[in-house]
Image 1 (tube, rainbow, N blue to C red):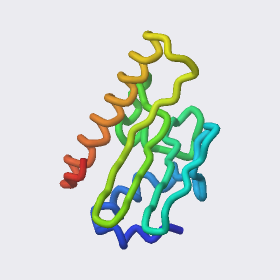
Image 2: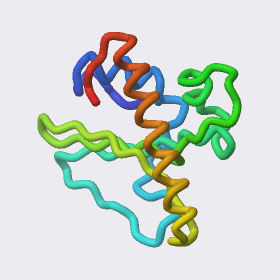
Image 3: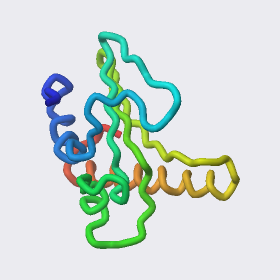
Length: 126
């Protein structure tokens, strides 16, 4: 289990949202190269696409029962020292313009709703 308290109390609340989506001990997500975190780094992968990870309820939390929302594949959390970064990631098989435009929509939509949810709950970290 991750001790989120070492990151500060805001992240413990974010952890409540993301913990069911966590890919424990993963440093890669179906890619050919893995990350090797330095000793002072924390890198966590969260599979948030509810179609590929049915345990993750982020989509339901952000949109309720509204169907058809564009959600990206992953959130990657990076921490080093006082730095905290959330990366919103959409994986695509090819670089066709249509697929890239769809990826942009998915990442933007997820980020916008995630940020709005945190702001509504009095957190301003993104």
